Length: 516
Image 1: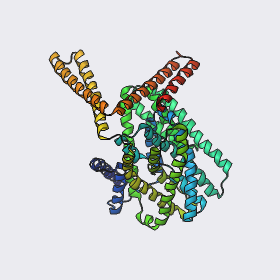
Image 2: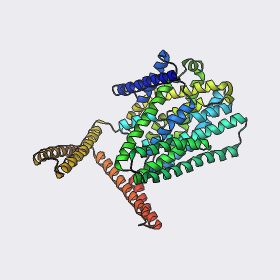
Image 3: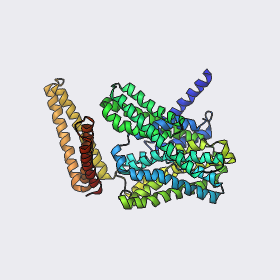
Image 4: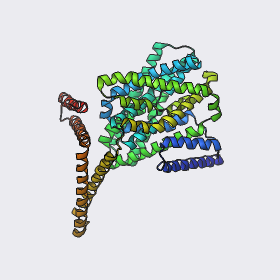
């Protein structure tokens, strides 16, 4: 017993060393972190310096997925979600269903798999995992709304794919597909997850409001992430959707009414680290778990699967995205190209493939090989070329002059914050007059230099000023909306007046987005 614990500890330490080494190395090489982890895992699996780690569905879904999903949902701005809810839900719900039908049909007709088996595979492979893509987005300064759509689609289509997979799996076991019972089951599992997550989110938010201890508040959010998922799965509803809703409410409502600035900072750093560790282990273990002989044996099936996934993704993005753009003007052709090529597959797909029961029969290993093949292709091919695509489409903000502008703005903000701090120290009597005078002159000189630099950039690139103005107006309108919500909660505003004023704010925000 003691020996097995020590052996597990050794393995974990080695994996953490690999994770740290890769994280340091990718700063010097142009390779997405998650891709580098998968390649490192593959290398370790080939040389086998220690026993192969048994990657299971429970490990992925019960240990790694809850913190990743909660953290992403916690940072999902409710106003941004409301603005983009149309494209997100169409892609995450309708898109998953269409993708499942197309992928399943192609694989059944082309590769010769039974239709029920092919549809089951199609459902599990329809869940997107854009971790590598989002990392590139943040590095290159891709438009925020595009990033929000990609993240939102991934969060919600994970739940949709899992529910659809479970329904098809039950049909496979029973040997028949009953449309109405399956449809009602789909709505029960989905809506049930939404109701549970919403309830938990509001309850925890009220508890956070009554507590001012960041250690306890971190513990409560940890209970929320894992507890909500476990309870949801135990009662037969969607754990992922429940965690998403709980995270969104705590991040937008609980953080505002119940967290001090210190708690928010600590909480953000805690969940950032938890997500980093979970993501790192998942992608490293993906590489470790790859069975190369199994992949080689099923290469024709893997090729069909990759082709079907690309066709299905294209049909969803271009088939649904084009009319969405026509009616909303929010999914340009450039964005559709990014959404198509950025539809990577990852942890959810692998977890569902590993969860395939014996009822699948002799198709279980081929389906797992197909899943690993698709995941590796999307990570190693699409994940490494998305940056090139963004550059070709002109969606990267890290052009030379824009980069200079962002650096100047950030330095100006930091300089002003530093000046306010030393002014406070001077007013509190901590600094002597001579030190204050010297520092004050130094920071004012730096501020003036940076302001002149920004002014010069404004004259050279008018769009920089327009973008800053747009962002400032958008933030101001968001502040108006929050102020109205506070007045309503305090009983200083009637429901009718609140709805009228919020409607005015929302119309101004809509006009701002449309450029009118």
